[in-house]
Length: 291
Image 1 (tube, one colour):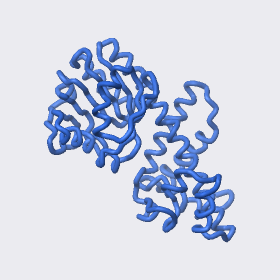
Image 2: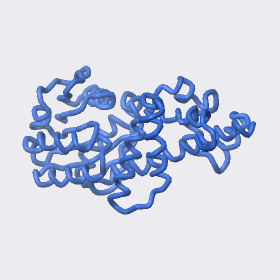
Image 3: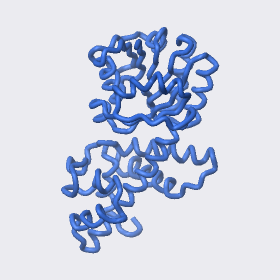
């Protein structure tokens, strides 16, 4: 396929490189980041999008997605696929999809899970929202960039799946960190707690696969001074998106709301920016019952 790729940051660059390595013709654009090997450089987003079979975007937020859509939709080929892999608010995803439909372009929102490591290895999971025919065209590209793609329904549902998943992740990580800090104060050895919880009803991905306690369970960012696998500020972004969505549809999400507030305090006031989201554990270690 002839592919345009807009947004060549930490995630977009390896994704574009994997498509090029698989034999697709990829033309890329980014305001600051260089093109990876095998990807031709365009001078503008519109140049990267014009005449392509598929245009993929990997952008920071919904406002930038809307602005890029304004630039590229007028020059995209009718029947082409506009595949947005950014994590943005559901409203932006659905608005862009509606504008794409008016322009005769097939839109699909397909945020990813798996981080930079997954993007590099081609093992991402895609959560896709959009029409069946758009998913069918994009599926071979998902297979190159990732290991799994789930068609979640109409436009916006990919974003909905991503933020619901990450709301669970944020809440369970906080609960896991709280429990380790409580275990410490109760005199319970962390390794013993892990052995119990990881095979009991409290087990979760946060505990079993990404344990926030150093030296316990499989290797995780906790064993590397909490250098990010998934940065706390990115978790905060996703939790804020979950609360924006909950507000829009009048959903009661008190745990998600509290998790967003705790990560906001951690990132904005407690030097959590640039640390892994599991670094909530040392935060709780230092705190007493009321701060």
